[in-house]
Image 1 (cartoon, rainbow, N blue to C red):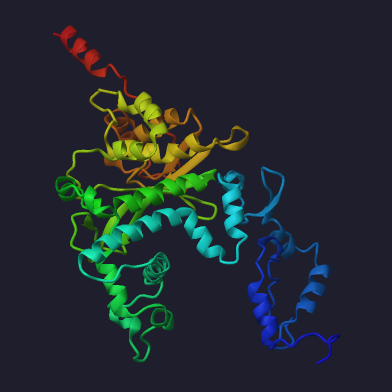
Image 2 (cartoon, rainbow, N blue to C red; image 1 turned 90 degrees about the vertical axis):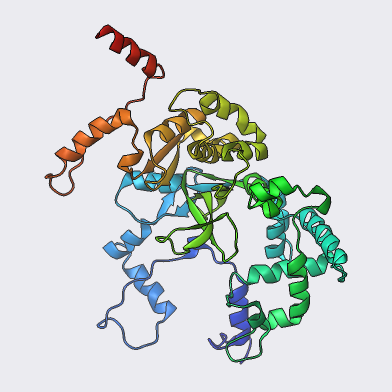
Length: 438
């Protein structure tokens, strides 16, 4: 084959070159549907496709595909799923990811081992090196060989790999049987050495051990790791536009009070975390555990404000100083509001836009929406289904009437129900009214 001739489709070098190219979504062209009458064989030619596209520019199929390319708020073209509802299209256009540390991200992405460098943006080498020292304290105390930083980083890589390639037993990763084992594990370190490090890995200094706190907080052992990841996630980037609040489950077989049983979840036994994730790129902006088994007496919102002290003032202004009967202070609802409002506290929506948080009926309620609106100075909204038992007494009356009227309504019928905010002096006014009626 000469230099002037095109490379064969089976040329290995050309295939490897294609695999190294980064895919740009703007280069994607919606494939044209080919029926049996149009096709002349099993071979699909790119040249034929380009010719047919040039001939049918005015066709409905091509125009429908072009609707996926829309104008973003910053003037750049981007891909958005083709939907007929303009309101939904506006939400999708507003969704984006704002990089807070562009210099660090660009430097990490520009290196040869960019995946590793991007990982170290969230789990820094300094923190992992400190973890290695804490682990060596335990290894030396048990009379075993201390680990070096490169070996400890390799151990972490193997631990992460176990979440992708799953076996029921650790020994099977080093097994030589059929459909078992993996060369990466065998080439990196021995199974005995891996289990030595795993049995001694430590997320805190031995001198800082607090027996009372450790017995009260089931996640105290790995609390420093969670704090590090939560802080770095909020520091690197922040989602814009549309996000979702939901529960994230970490399946486990460990004997811990932090584990809960939920028969309707894919992971029935798991440690549950509240998570706020952006729609674009699914970036995790904030996360916190649900305090299952935690008996320290410290509310989740107080622990979250310990990590992000700038949120303490808006929390106290909106919820923390409220001493009324229906106050959200020190409740899980306060944590959810701060987790969602953290995005606005970090970076305002460009051009005075709004933020929208979608959630299921476990979270959606009028009191949370009102608190979030006040927390973000009117920037954020909550959208989601509503569970009737979570509706406050002030709005339950009119909502019940609306449900009754909708029972025999035709499909597609809807009814707008106004939400009322309970008067903060309701108890005093109620007692005053009762005394006047006597």
